[in-house]
Length: 518
Image (cartoon, rainbow, N blue to C red):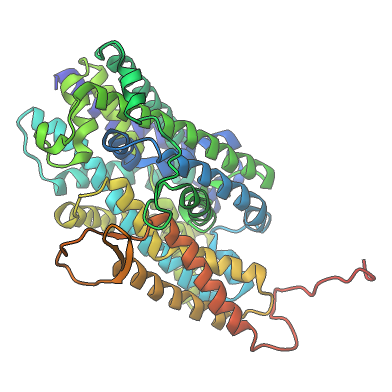
């Protein structure tokens, strides 16, 4: 690693927050701070959505998936696109036309403040864990870079520095700075990925592509995969991936906040559906890099053969040791770009709008909401740094880290999406029904994720909470099924409870209009 590379990385870390603040200008109100007064172009939001969901987990881990296996991960992206189309026409009109600040405002209008706060707190906890893991993943290439210079920096120090860079433009520039910086950063890491492909192309032997194809590295569809235990089997990827995307892009404030910054429903729909197409191309790009790395190293076990600490260091190892000076720093900066897409604005807006304003007995002025938004931006930045540091100390990295990140959402995404669908599908459901269904779903999913395992070659179902490894191989239910199962539990429990109610519909639900009346 050369001084030129370090200079590029430092320039990026300093320059990007300053650029975001300059683009955003002065924030004058809470609406401007949280949703940029709904005047950001749809294509900028589209790119920002992709950048927000990509993170270092994708940039580092997706190549590792192709390196160790095949390209079946791409099947998930097609499920993601299906889910976005559904969200675009079912949920987005409720958010944008209703001029809400957070997605959970819809639940407040439909059911009441209790379920709105419950959903918001659940989002806050889930996002803290997921983005803590994401920030930790960002520290991996930074640690590799510093090690090349003989500097043994701890993960705690690295995540603290990255956290400060992230909070700088989020605090000063609001969502407008976040969206524009996201868009610029996505272009940066995509160009970096293309540069990696160009360098690898000059280092690979003739016939590498045919050899990789013969080894099944480009296989996207694998009918032999188990639909219960493989996340990339066709039913799992298409159905589970679609419902997972409905939750992540329809019930997660991180994405919804960006979509609500557009001018109208149509613009938000174009941004969301367009992001699904871009994600497919992006996954294909990084999987292709993984195949090229497999052809370059020809190592079956990168941790053992290359002396790495974990599989997810593979891509960073190549960038630091085999990329030319200048390009290496540019690509590492691109990886950092994928991580510095800030969720702090979403966390702050949900905290202030859905929790603080519900707890206070007196309404907050516009100035107070604005001030509280900035205060909570800083508070969540501190919590995020602590969470990332704990992941660095405690996480077990046997699987690619991107799969761990997606699994975290399984505990709560089903309950979040299920609450929205309950309000849309069951007209007589009340707030009590929604809260009980929500709580039952979280408990059931915790049991499924932690205790339900499939044991042995015939994938026999077993219940196992023990930490000891059995003689036979045990695998969990494929993580894309977590969200559909959670949605089903929420709808069944909430729907059954709603049958108790007779007579008038709850406030906020209109009676259906008869054909005669029309």
